[in-house]
Amino acid sequence: MMPNPITLYHSYAKTVVFQEDKSTYHVKAHHPDLTICGVGRSATAFKLKGEPLVLKVFYPPYENIAEQEQHNYRKVKDSSYYPTLYESGSNYLVIDHIDGHTFFQCLEEGIPILPDYVQQVDHALSYAKKKGLNPSDIHLHNLLVTKDDRVHIIDIARFSQTKTCYQWNDLKAGYYKHYHKAYFPSKVPTWMMNLVASIYRRVH
Image (tube, rainbow, N blue to C red; front, side, top):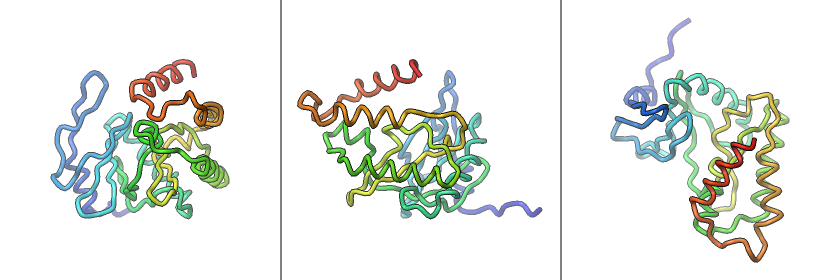
């Protein structure tokens, strides 16, 4: 079998250097054409200069997740709810850059989360299930809404897992029970959302 060609994106990924500090990874170096646009538990995402694309590079212990996620993106490639996958390697993915706000940022900045957004998430997850995936680990950071009120879901590596995940159902229940009530704050402090997320993870 012929080896994969060294593409421009592969070359970019090779310039990314991570430094570990107490099981946490930080970016130590990267190509000047890359700008950090997202930091997660298993990878860091970079916006590519001059292109509407994101290069997602996985930390060394999580490089196997790159294969899982590219497989999942290919399964939902015909849905506009998910970014398009353009290229993948042993430790990286190249996908659409979605210009919008995460649900987390909406709560943080006081941007209304419309009932239609919640319904769009339901439609997107239903589509993934029809493609044989098991939507999991749906949280406020991987749900984005654009200026034209379109919802997109990113970070779908865990759609491969087999156990049942109730996270989206719990978020949705909280939305319908509390979000539109008079006592719900117009802007939710970041520390409060992080605290709730931390408690949720411990309980579940």
